[in-house]
Amino acid sequence: MKLRDDFYWGNSVSSMQTEGAWNEGGKGKSVYDTREATENASDWKVATDSYHRYQEDFDYMQDLGMNMYRFQISWSRVNPEGNGEWNEEGIAFYDQFIDELIARGIEPMVCLYHFDMPLHLAETYNGFISKEVVNAFVRYGNEMVDRFGHKVKHWLTFNEQNISSMPDEGFRVAGYLTGKQTLEELYQIQHNTMVCHARIANYIHENTDAKISGMLAYQEVYPATSHPEDIRLAREFDEFLNHHYLDMYTYGKRPDSYLKFIENRKFDLAITEEELAEIRKLRSDYLTFSYYSSTTIDHTQVPAGAAPNEYMPLGKKDNPYIDTTEWNWQIDPDGFRDILNKIYQRYNLPVFPIENGIGVIEKWDGKHPIEDDYRIAYHKDHLLALLKAVHLDGVDVLGYLGWGLIDILSSQGDMRKRYGVVYVNRENHDLKDLKRVPKKSYDWFKQVIQTNGDYLLK
Image 1 (tube, rainbow, N blue to C red):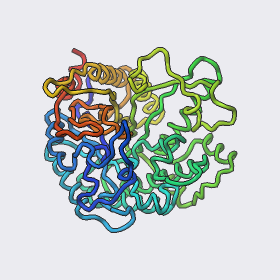
Image 2: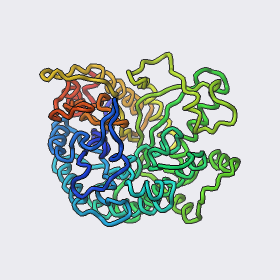
Image 3: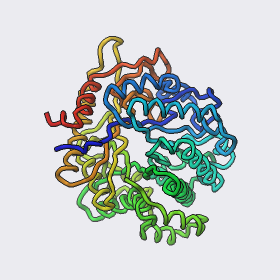
Image 4: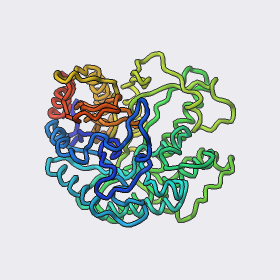
């Protein structure tokens, strides 16, 4: 039960959930910078202040034995308007940031977009609904590859790209500010972001020795019962929300079911032959995904004629056979193993889970380490599932990156939802001193990493 000698152990974050410094270093505004605090959410102006404290965070990563860090370049930090002049101060920040990682033996993985559209592009063009924003993003991505490709060998374009297929989230993450939010517009955003990914991935393969993957938030959805309609909806949801993207990343083509759906709905997505040619060239060096939980779908809650994209908001049903977190994310390590298999056995590319973790409300007493045995149990169970996928199923797994292993703002800006093995001493409306404090899980994770997973079997 051994992992590969070059297995990657690490941490994943986004810029807006960590950096802060929203108006420093020449940074322009993103859509997050205008969002105000609410009762259970902070604003995004300070986050965990990693802009000023990243070396301290890197020291913790090095001490843990991590050898990869997946972070995001803030588009508006390196190009304040998104399609204007380059901010050399912002680019110099990331240049030093990357060097500090490499000096500690930590491989950088760069993600280009994690939902923080430059405000200028959102207000002027309504985000990724616009081909103007497609061109601006490709220009930005290629420039970052030119600047950093000689020392960054792992790249992602979009975090959880299939969120652009989800009607409850897709418009928000695309920088879409005004409009009717029609299904056709959602499919336009899907297409436009895939064109972006293809053009940048092809640029990387043609001009560097770096590797790139598409990334999705794999939606593990079971039929709620053995009813044939539950089974059909679960399969269609899997095809449209997961395999549509994986097929594109791997083969450069959309599934026929997806193409037939567009035809039957008479969607006009302004697709050009040049865009299709770029997509046909698309390949991935491995396949990455995030995974936190699973759920089930109940066909009795889904009206006839609903699109597969709409099945989950309508038909989601809790699974009575597995536990859940206080955020109602159901804990399912077997689902993790299932996904590793479904991706690898279908696409025969190395698989790389780059987000996994459990968010929990935690309070520090100011003195004693947080006793987070629940976090140890969560990661242990998921890593044991990964080991089974490798040794019992033959899956080629490149590594395992936890999400936010130094506490960060949640995706909704809620500091109460903590994923880290290191506590950051701030709350939603009280920044306190932002002190970093290892939890009990820190020492456990350190032993797992420094034995390359052998400690899991003790």
